[in-house]
Image (cartoon, rainbow, N blue to C red; front, side):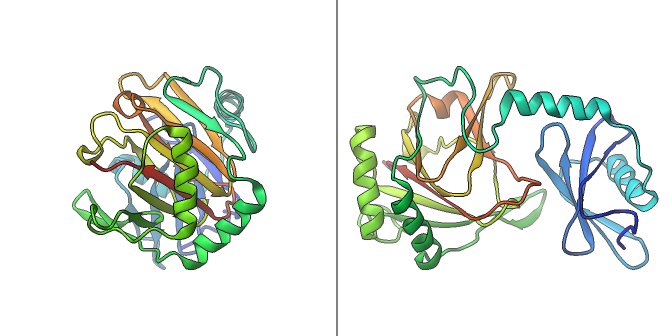
Length: 284
């Protein structure tokens, strides 16, 4: 049951716990919700014809869910000048319109190279990867429910050593050799991620699987839509950075990063086009 007072633009409200929530109508009979200060996805509320609702997510408490549902049904607009000023400050500190990175990015753990591949080659590769890759969408279990992972993936590698991988294509092999010359190691696999639009994302995590050793080196090559790559210290979230990963760019994540930091590509309320990301890894 869509509220007639809601337009296609996002609305904001502060609920009883003090959390600011950004609410955006989606294409169905529901609303996407984002933490308005942190700009991360917190779930979706669906309504039926009788006004009954259900919450699909795991962040909001029952009271918070009721607050948001009540706001949508009654639409009580409120002054949010404080929130707007805070958002403006955050935009200045952490985010960039099309390119850039946070000041004091730890170069001993991260190295960023824009235009690593070249625009023309990047344009051709983006189109080819979208068209020819056998993409699949995996599931993950959260809060006793199975959810589709919000992106498509494909895994290539040395098939004689790593089970479940697809054989290297000539294009991936060429990129691998270029990346290896900079990283100084040999990679034996690459994970492809396809972010179709702003709803596709990857949550906070660190790539510290046992199959890659305790301090893996990962080379990340991006094509297409610029997306924010956020990094934060696991022990102190006040220590955080952001890099806008540009078309045809390379981000080299060095050995100590995965041990102390975690990273994400957040959902976006702004319109986003396709992005392909290649992360080259050494599976041991």
